[in-house]
Length: 256
Image 1 (cartoon, rainbow, N blue to C red):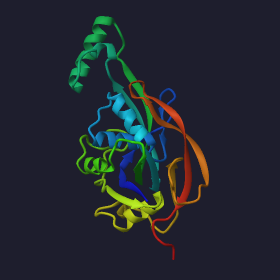
Image 2: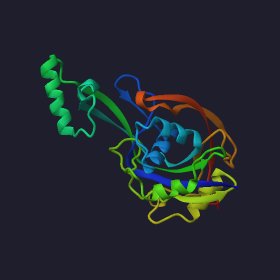
Image 3: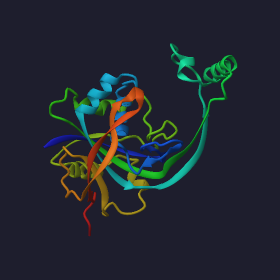
Image 4: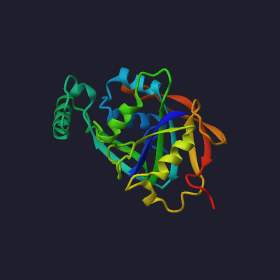
């Protein structure tokens, strides 16, 4: 038996960062490993610049995700203005107004352009997932700490980007089960109210896509493997490593 913590992720929009080339910012079709770890880190109030704590959390946990509904893809033509890092060096807690004033001053003094960044960003609309996390045997983390943090997050959880808040409480529960699939089914049978069941377009007896880390015990046949570049490497440089992810299918309720 293994202790798992299972929680739900759904909202009007989500964006799970994929490999970015130039101005195009695509999204994975489901939560990435780095995104799930980011949600845990935010709940634990680990800051983005605490690379040591983030690396320890990454090594400590395994992740599985179940796609309940994939939603639809929409794209946003996005522009933003920010001053270069050198203009804000040594300053923290800068407001948006202060950023724009600093940008104006910097452009005036250096003769630079407006500093506008243009991008096309993908989002998933009306999608829903379940996340399952387990603590590896040699880790120092206690799964009870995750449950407490997800119940009262230190930082507001969001679905990949800050503009994508969660629509429902995470509804985290610790479940002792023989596999990821068994943990997901147990959570589903005792799911909170409200839950992602209310946004499903159909029955939970259909087959859903399950993805999990290769060291996890899924409890369902592995159909294929895929390569993801979503293992956190260096947060300060936005660098990620490749990892193999196992893929299979499972239902949350018995088929009739």
